[in-house]
Length: 217
Image 1 (tube, rainbow, N blue to C red):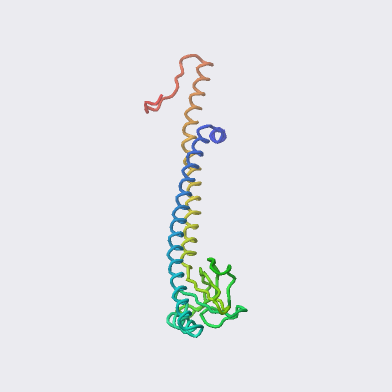
Image 2: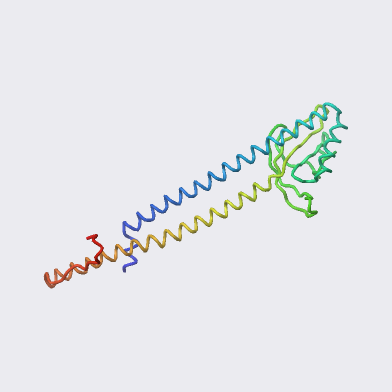
């Protein structure tokens, strides 16, 4: 009976609303942290990728296709899948040079894309890595793709989602415990006043409403 009154009370609803607002603020804070961090990481990655693309394009302008192939091979052999993705493909998008086995599913030339690819990392194990890349079509019709491994951003997102889920669960638990505890205490005191009031009406003024010495009458 007391639990039913507790759940139906205005105090309980107000407590839930207050904790709900607090929970929304926490979720918004997590969202902002993720958005700002992801934006910063992608901005730096895009700058590095664009600088690498310009360097390779300069190699192509200076030495033609052979000069571009040599530049791509040097980068691929120096650190295979150490963070960079390079691919030169012919007019049919068949690989000619680079460390990607096939042309990935990316947007058109000059646009940014993200794709997953099985790569051989430095430890010699096969992993599914997440890349961000841009591409361009060269004057001879060949296609150049330059990208960077952003798997760390995906791992960061996973950790943020896990922390957010834990925070939401914790908020709900605290909301339930705090709301029931505070409201039940209030409702219990009101119910004791009601009992004392009924006793006074039935038997006279000899009964008194119980006090707890908290000076909050």
